[in-house]
Length: 273
Image (cartoon, rainbow, N blue to C red; front, top):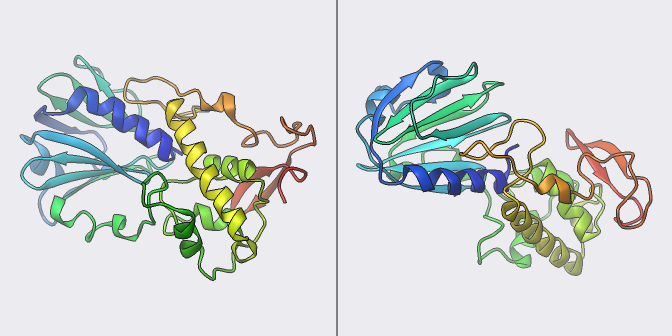
């Protein structure tokens, strides 16, 4: 958390405010939240550069600056990027303040796991963790055949495979549980047991769930907010995630909660096989 729909929502809401604005000043309140390039300090690299656009790759934001520099931002568990139209006093967990031509962007993170890395744009996909990411689930090139190829001959549960960012980029616990429910597949199934028909159902479910999450501006249980500080509403559409012990909305059977791939997993034993 945040997962692909939340990061995409942050991208869209932040880009509305900051595109084509120059970064006038960088204030580091907790310097470990950022990483410069080679021996050049982060604030020196970034100050004076213009924000050209904001892209996304999996759960990462790519803030493209001029003169061949990109900021790779990973929110991890509780990271936020908030835009303010006027100068704003940093809150308790704000670690970085970007003062722009117009307004400010604050990077905050309660648990201090999130990071912002400066890297030459030309090295983005070869000199960072982005090079190891699997395909984007919402790209046109993402097909059932791609899912089958990414699963390969793995001897792991489908839940574990979908959480692996090297298999597919952007999925986390929320959208994996929801995708598997829509596809009617038990999270405990081995990927090597899935038929072509089941893989096609899973492919379709992944794309539908992610798009629904984006349309609802993401899922806000605790920390997630978009760049305007607004919550998402996808939690109202959740079928299984966070509902262990409650009745299935489709069949009424009690949803089971188990531990799988190191994560709490909720599914319906009657609807998913």
